[in-house]
Image (spheres, each protein chain N blue to C red):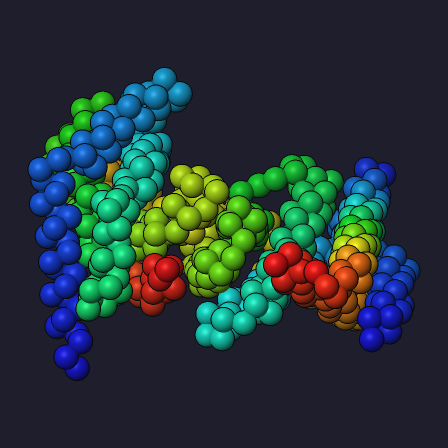
Amino acid sequence: MDTGLTYLAIAYGGFFIALAGYLFRIVRRDGELQASVDSLEARAGDNTPGK
Amino acid sequence: MTRILAVILSLAMLAAVGAVFLHAPTEVQMGDVQRIFYFHVSSALSAAACYFLVFLGSVLYLRTRKDRWDRFAGVSAELGVLFSAFVLFSGPLWARPIWGVFWRWEPRLTTMLITFALYVAYLMVRSYGDPGERTQRFAAVVGIVAFVNVPLVHYSINMWAADQQLHPPKVELDPAMQQTKLICYLAFGCLVTLLMRLRLNQERQAARLQALATTTHQ
Amino acid sequence: MNDVPGIWTHARLLLRKDLMTEWRTKERLSPMVFFVLLVLLVYNFAFELGGAALWEIGPGVLWSSFVFASLFGLQRTFAAESTNDCLDALLAAPVERGALYLAKMMGNVLFLVGVQLLTLPLFGLFFNLTPGLYLLPLLVVFLLGSASVASIGTLFAAMASHSRLREFLLPLLVLPVLIPALISCVAATGFILAAGIPGRAVQFWPEELTLHVGMLALFAVVFSTLAWMLFDFVIEE
């Protein structure tokens, strides 16, 4: 059943690689969102009252 | 809260994988490849749960018109599609060593494929619509139609391909296998919960950002 | 309930308008019929048609060409209302939205059945189909099949113009949803055509037909009702 083990490995390996990739994407997008929030706050802070 | 969930999930996943490879006995006829079953079935169940959540979110959106339900439906669909993709990926990998073919047009796989196509179409309606209330409405309508269609698909595919059935109707599972299956269900439950939480928070954050960005530019 | 006669009256009026327009212009029926002819032509070169293959792939060829033609026809469902703000006028008028759905859906059913009846002789010609009374149950399948297609097609057609996907949206949504109905249409047609195989005892209503006709009726009823309820959400501005 050697080929069976290969398929088993691909299946579970694929699952965890995909999961890791998905989590990585979430984290990266969270980072981008945070960066946007920071830049917005910085810009809001730059607005002088008299504008 | 998220941290706690992440820790619980890691432990659950560890337990699940351990159970799958160490606790569950080797199946007599199929050998070790049968171990794919645990994650395959858990994924299918998770996908089904997610699709129900899409239906729920869609109905609630149309009734309340609150953005949060639209986001809820969208995230659920995304997860549902991903879990379905894994079912369609692991199924052929299991089938090949056992039945000699990667694919057969048999009821369960075919139903899963059609359902997958349905919700991919749902996601396309969301991403190719102009952002705004109208797209949210359309997506909700599609979300409802898709879910109502699923039992019909299931029934008619079973009618169509009854002779092609590769999945045995009722399986007698060894107690250790039952336990492994349950552990995997629980682990996937944690997984779905955590992923939904992460994505929903992210979408809510993105929406707030969008609102902020438009007001700041006035 | 004063609304109920109102909705059917309105639906009938709107339907009459559409039918009269079509009678004068023939801009939906003719292209659809011609399209079916072309698809049959393509299938002839794509597959080995004729001979024993007829009974196996005939129904599939017939229904896939109908489905593809219907996708074209459905795109045009709201075409008349899209110019000159006609749709806004309709929505502003004291007409229930449901009436608009009913009218458009029934119109689509009539167009689809019309195309099917007009192209069946063509199909019979290319496939050497022996004409006979055994073909009569096909009318039922045509009607219910068209109703199934029209029920969801009309709903989704109202959405198509508002997406970047434009004309792609309708097929992408309709095709997966339609699969249960398609399975039954093809199977039912297969059983009916099989009754005409030379040498076979002619059965007017093959017993397997009931199951599939039932499925089509269920599909048409469920999705017409669902689409009618959801139509409001799609058509509002």
